[in-house]
Image 1 (cartoon, rainbow, N blue to C red):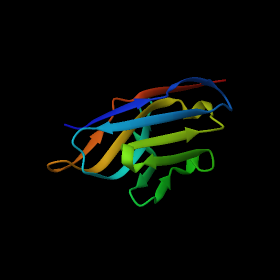
Image 2 (spheres, rainbow, N blue to C red):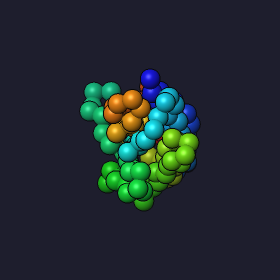
Image 3 (cartoon, rainbow, N blue to C red):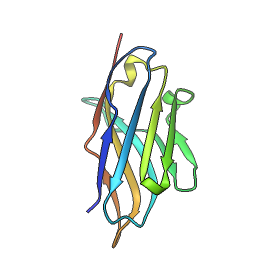
Length: 119
């Protein structure tokens, strides 16, 4: 069984920074993509950023230039450095791992961590 555990969320003022971490555990042989999505009540979950095993990244237009995704392949961990935070970044942030190989391939989600940006 694969588990994703997020940490680093919290309350921050406008313009501040937070760093989210997500560690995948279990009998993992490989993870293709790891990334972050976010969701606010009443809206669909949206992609924030994702990184492939080879280092290719995709960012939502709304976070380009402010957020940076990174991975530690050996530790099955993904990070999201969030700078210049805005009130509209307030959401529950979910880590996901896609193309995870254990005894079979699967996709997994974390439980979510709240990020609140106050003005």
